[in-house]
Image (cartoon, rainbow, N blue to C red; front, side, top):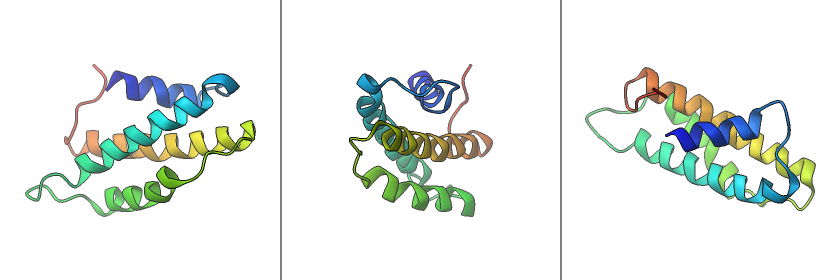
Length: 102
């Protein structure tokens, strides 16, 4: 989980991610968002909240979006992915589906 928080911080921190690492960051954020989405719907005994479903749906097209060669656009995609993932992490922690950073 720590890697998720590190990547979220890199994407939405004060400094934009460096050009050389933005593509890899986007790829990792896509994986994190997919994993969080899978956790959200994994157990039929604990159905997701309406907000969780909304975030999963919002994340789907972002995970499939093409990474632009333009650095500013790529950073924008990274940040959109990170904001959705961050919101989903908060929802999952609040619902006790996952534990927060210790």
